Image (cartoon, helix red, strand yellow):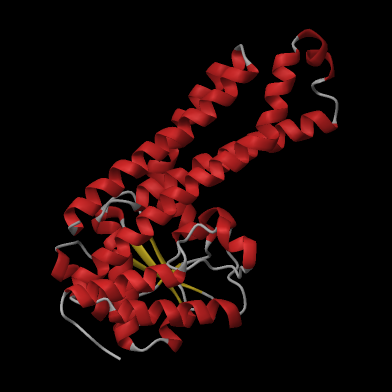
Length: 296
């Protein structure tokens, strides 16, 4: 499958998954019945509109990112200017995150409003070719228009989790005692919402995030003409996550980062917003092999 075909297929899958998340949020209101249905329909629409317009501001604030000038980060600007010129993208806003953990993310509703944020640790510990690989990956998210999709997915999933928490508190404080007698179906629906809705939302969000990571890796490799810089960078970043102090970031935006910023082992990796690192690296090596590029 070509990169163009893969991009189309992935975009189709992600929008189907977004529709699934929105439908889940509306379905919660339908199960609870009556006025809840209309409230949740309006809530779903508002969350999508809010996510579209303010996704970049929320992600940057949640990561404690600060704007950085070209005088402060000349190497970073030089690489970004080179790559944006190569793929015909406008220069994104540039931010740094005050963390020793090497990592990066991109956000924004479209190319004109895109922002790229890198941690201080990424600029400190990675060689230039690996930094270029990371930035090619992040600019590929901009090129593929999938930053918006993932951000909206994260926001809707967070909204579903919030609703479940509200219902849980209602149970704890007896908010459903009278309704239980009059409408046991609503009680059962609320209970199922508390238990199952966050899980379903999480699984849908995982599918969105993993699709866009694979596509950004492939597009980034094509941008550079080789997958080696990005494959090497992924290995370095993963080691950095394990040894550096954890990023102080809201878990709701963790899916935006090139590698998951929190340590995870065993079963935790099964529910990661990112594909397995070994699989991402394998695909990058396969790309190079298909291009006739071989390295030790």
